[in-house]
Length: 114
Image 1 (cartoon, one colour):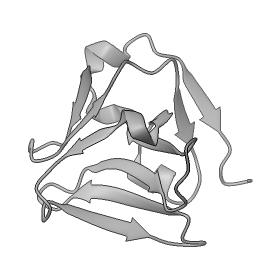
Image 2 (cartoon, rainbow, N blue to C red):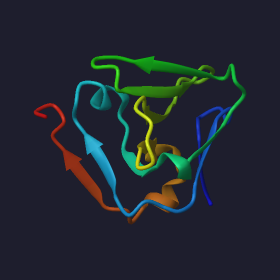
Image 3 (cartoon, rainbow, N blue to C red):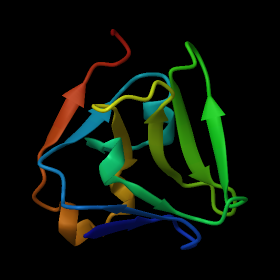
């Protein structure tokens, strides 16, 4: 099990393993958040937080919600608002320990163009 935490420690996200790669996207929101996404099946990810500890942000075509800590503001993950057996979620890999991510390849995605 691998755990990502926000800066203040209020929120934790647990995943079963380190990602094989992460995505650095330059779309309008990802570049502002400064995140790198590790992708998992939604069922593999556990968000550990009190019900009032998170804020959600939904924009554009309303297909994703971004979950962040109300206390420190760290973006923890995005979740699809369309649920299905193969639904993916993105976990902000910058919230894992640096030593875990040291050798994980980074894939650049031109989300500004797509």
